[in-house]
Length: 370
Image 1 (spheres, rainbow, N blue to C red):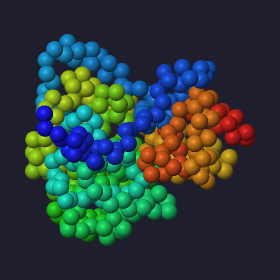
Image 2: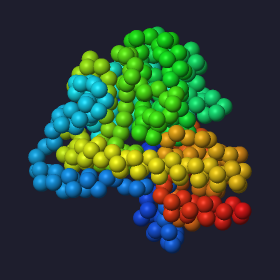
Image 3: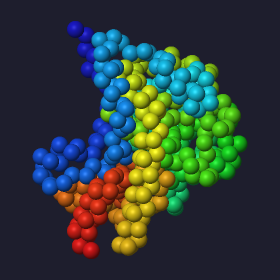
Image 4: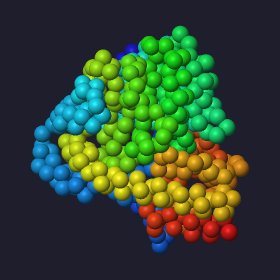
């Protein structure tokens, strides 16, 4: 056999990747700490669960599990198209919006092309871009933890292929306004893609100056949405992209053929049909945020107001964030340190049900001795 020792098994961009480390599961916390109560407030899931209609439809869908799923999610695309005033050919469904990001990275980038985003945003984008060996220009967020669109526009060059904006941003919960978005888009060349990740759209859409990306006629904008957050379907992995027919037709060529699964498609359809449950979810989150703001003000906690379903705490340094998160974990409150998102001195709290937020407050006061 010829000697091939000089040829690496794994490309450098993959070798140098750090594996994604998720927060601890409820089972892990039970086994390690045996707390009397566990509140999982780490991953921005819907702590109310999902619509009861979902479970009924998923059971029905399981009767077809021996068959491959509809590869183009025909029925779901039709419903989403009607709700968003677009055509089905403007929509691609995938196994979560992170799968859509991966699709974008493999569909549109040439070897020398680059992406621009903030230095403190959704870690999933960085992972997928790095897998493809895409160079990323990371622009610091503003002092109030928002995307600095002016600085990002100044970074656009001949090699720029895509700009990624999470709106609202994850993990900060901040957002760009409609006037800022319009001003920014006037500076973006038409051959540069702008990906608007609207994972938390359902929580944000009623904010007066929030820019609904689908209301604009930009051929180079790709809007991402998901069923993992407000709809409570994180375990099914289902999300979608909305863009021009030209863009979607190219993305359909490179998507994984049979994604998402049949039960996931059924779950998404059932969730879309239960707007009452969605309203209940939004009401619980809004009430929980207001209660948390008051609690933080009472205890002089540094935090960032949010239009998503989480709130970010700011600590003086990384070690304090580490110590706080660990101490809360031992009390059964699972929070998310967001060092992987570029904010090592910050901690993100998902807004949960009333009993979970009371658990957070009680544990906070015990841990902080206040």
